Image (tube, rainbow, N blue to C red):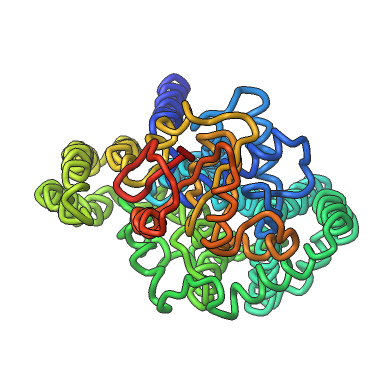
Length: 545
């Protein structure tokens, strides 16, 4: 690909990538939670102790909170600034894969790797949702790529040292993004590689002394400072949030061991069949090195270990396996650089058939509606899904045409661009469901009734997206959930039962509350004076008469 088409492709990808960050309303729980914690940081000026709803929240480190709070400070609080960190780190991961793939496997392989990563369904979706997984994926990816560039065959000593320093810095930032998995997973893969390849001399090339100094200089200060300010932090964060999360079902996210198989198959669309071909060839494809490692073998170990590790965990969410996607993209990109055009053609035919089937199946999206109230919302979403499916089919057919004509580059670009567009349309269309999944609309009804310093109670529930849209915190009533530990430290910040709320409500000259319809009926039957000011299908907001 010459320079002009390359930069045109780059511009198109960037425009598509950032096109819908503001369009969609925040969806709970993650998007609300990770929008609210930075909002409270920026509002309070306390950038040391994370708080959710003004309650200490120690489940994750602070790097993304700082980044989002900085975006709020610079550009204001918006939906796009809440999602900006995920989008930027996701795009940066694509660039990193392109650069490293070009250095390791050649220019075509680097471009193919970036195109594969930037069009994989799960990677695109997580890159546009406000959650922590894309940030930690990028820094783990940067650490992996720095390590591979440092340990490639024939690298000069000074360049090796510099890339290892990049690796140590990236791993420190991954720990600050989501905790110990940022260093535990890479360390485990390194040990596994050492044992399998019997390359114990590799450890002498890691620059351990200077590297560990960089790692702790970046990662340790916040952990030390927050532990000094909050002595309860260390046990909760390191024991409860890491060992108990992995070994027990305490977080209520238990799924069977095979849970990530369908996640991987769907998440790697449209490259899932090419992926299996690439994985089957990866182990023996690299030539024997003189002084470095075999990068495809290391990438394969990285991919398999992360998949097995999270499959064995007692806590599972689809986004957990995202850190394996950059390594998969590199393996697929190296494979595409050597693939025969007809092989690519036949491996993409089943995906094209799937695209055709999806065109037929989109009307059945309405079957996911929970009740009659949601039917119109899902009907609108079905239209978005149909447009996405038709474009996906068209792009797949175009890619098949190019691959049949032995134009592999054009085929890969076609498959990739339509994969990215399809994923973005599926995400953008999700805005059709916002009235049932986001509190944006009820928040707009509540805002005219807000007054400074007026109590606002949340009964038996906590809607994660409500505080960011209201710009204030709520007083929890008969509900703790993930804030239970913080409320143990500061018990005066909630009301344990409805009886206590009723007493507080009657003593307030003016107050607001939000609850489920069932709770509203119960309190109304008990004679509690309330006036409805806003409602939707699952929530009712009231004020004192």
